[in-house]
Amino acid sequence: MSTTDTSGTTERQEGLGDAGEHLSTAPTEDRGDTPVGGPVLGVIGWIRWFWRQLTSMRVALILLFMLSLGAVPGSLVPQNSADEMKVQAFKEAHETLSPLYDKLQFFDVYSSVWFSAIYILLFVSLIGCIVPRTGQFVGQLRSRPPGAPRRLDRLPAYTTWRTEAAPEEVRTAALALLKGRRFRSHTAGDAVAAEKGYLREAGNLAFHVALIVMLVAFAWGQLFKSEGGKLIVEGDGFSNTLTQYDDFKSGSQFGIGELEPFNFKLDAFDGTYEKSGPQRGTPRTFEAAVTYTRGGEPTKAVIRVNEPLKVGDSKVYLIAHGYAPVVTVRDGRGKVVYNAAVPLLPIDNNVTSTGAIKVMDGYRDKNGKKEQLGFQAFFVPTFAGAGQGTMFSQFPALDFPVMALTGYHGDLRVDSGLPQNVYQLDKSKMKQFTDASGGKLAKRLLPGETLTLPDGAGSITFEKDIKEWASFQISQQPGNGMALAGAIAAIAGLTGSLFIQRRRIWVRAVRGEDGVTVVEMAGLGRSESAKLPEELGDLALALTQDAPPAPEPADEPAEEPAPSGEADK
Image (cartoon, rainbow, N blue to C red; front, side, top):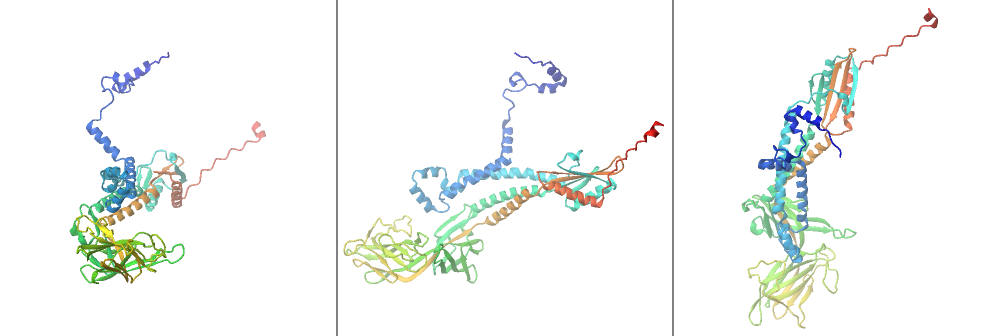
């Protein structure tokens, strides 16, 4: 067993008095003046600790990463705020995952509790980080650069020379030179102190402030936005009122009275496509000619992809296109009971389209019962040729249009009180027509051809006039301008914080023992940079041109030895 002599330590601690007691390494349970387990923070202490952790840069980066990670489900899972039909289709296709996603609020990511919590914590963290740093930066701007260290030769960038000029003259020339190079400089004792690169910290603060601006813009846009869609057939129009929209979404703070008062009419849609090569079928011209009115004379405009129509605070975007064949339905006596262009929805890139035709005023059967008519329509702008199975289009332009119709009769259930998709046919209370042989009635029609219905139910004609439709998105996004300004400021601030170096320069001039002025120049950067020695050399060269260096003192020649003969005398 080894022993340790502690007498010397005890004596030293006794000599220190009360301070010596604090140097004791004895366990806390052996000391009666301190509670077992160390000091207790208390409520205020824990609040301060939590605030310091929340406002640290590490936590801010973690929250920013969590925010970006939390946005991933919003891009992979359909959102109720964007398309409720896609959400419903997803739930029907994934019956096991859907209840879990509902509990995790994956169908409403951006309004979920957990995403909002991350968002608010990041907002508070950035503000808590920026406010004290801004105060420190303002204090640094108001203060002068610190005086020169005693040993300049220990700094990473250093040079020295001698000159015949007086120390005061060197310091005056150095002060003028550094101020001319936009250094904040002043004379402190026997040296000139200068500093440059404050824009680095300013850029850092601007970057963080820009992040807050972008977060505010995102929140503002979500609260006060409005967004709706409208499908318009050539020749039809739209008025910016709530009842005119096919679908409409808005923020919780948006008022219907804030809708921009305007209307427009779709004059024509122009679409051309590449006819050959690997890009065959790719749109070359995709634009909608409209006439809009906003409290004045009608104005002509053309809406293209990524070139929306701007009306006040609203923007009208062109988002989709399709065909609306014109059909005419007649009853058994030849009276026209339906005549309209029927928009059909594309299901592929070649605009193979499908939809429904619903005729409320149908016909009366043999028993005098009134029945409604419904037709399932399948349309191709360029028919691929006769064959078995479902037909398809081989090109998006109207080169060889064909429409296949399947007729039904019965109750369309439009008065059932349940919402119904206008592009789908509810066949639960309907029966398909049969032909003379008892088979199901279905036929492909060319423009101008007619399908005659059995039992005097009438006929349906595919007219030669085929119109086109365009789908528009009308939106008001009040935070977009603020978000753009924040993004530009963030890029500018980040660029400044990365490429601007904050550095300090000192120039000391004192008279040496031989009466010649000794000049020392040194530099120190906040971060490692290969440009600091180069900049210091450039400043030293400019300063020596104003005050030429003095020649170095020559070594005294050694005395010549006396001849040996004279030495003997």
